[in-house]
Length: 360
Image (tube, rainbow, N blue to C red; front, side, top):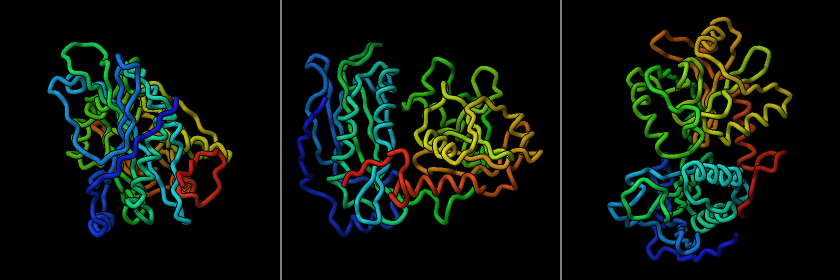
């Protein structure tokens, strides 16, 4: 399916002086560009229609809008990267488009065609290219979809709004990636088999916030969840996948099923295997993590995701005891993979898997 977007430039964009000032230190997810993409769906009208690029503005929604009551909502996160030659790259937008369709399917929502998803993202990047930060900054893109039908009743909505907004972001870590501390949640679980753990929906993140608050109360940066059945196996952080690096050079990461199939996770597996490393996707218990850290068998642990790329894990805290990993320092495997991945994203090195899509 192909759709032509009606381009309606903002009549009152942010003045250049103000935009430049905002880009000096945009932080993460607090500054937004001038435009957004909107595509609407109505079952009675035969599906998707009215694709537009227009000025970023508030939505008008009836108080009985379905998303407000039954949480039919999904989203994605990806970045646009400025190359040294001034062009702009997207990193694996096709993978985001596929995952978005999978999320829609699980949440009983209309599935937007992958080419429409990618075109919407590219159009926002094109019209708001002046918002691209320099250096290690990037333009964070947030495609999302909400149920917009007005009704009170538990059924899939027959109307949806798909949108893409953009936010310039600086480097996630100032001064380089610093090891993070992790709190093991033993009271709360993130997902169960058959649930929505593999879906990028707001409800999953809302359910993680209480555990994240508990982590902060214990002086930790992030929370890591255990499986919902036995409360033994490591699953993922509140918003990131996790990897373990062993003394034989191999890597391990929890298997898919109840965790998000991270695109950064998948990319790391591919790059590690390219380098001849063994990567296992297998269950790993908290007890084994503690034992392997103590014995020295475990050399590194790190989390990964779109925002931070790779975050080394230096300390693990839990009710049953704390432990450090390799003295709490960032390890060479995590940092090497991070550099390789970032260099591909910014177009500084070769792209062996054809992950890059050049917008211009």
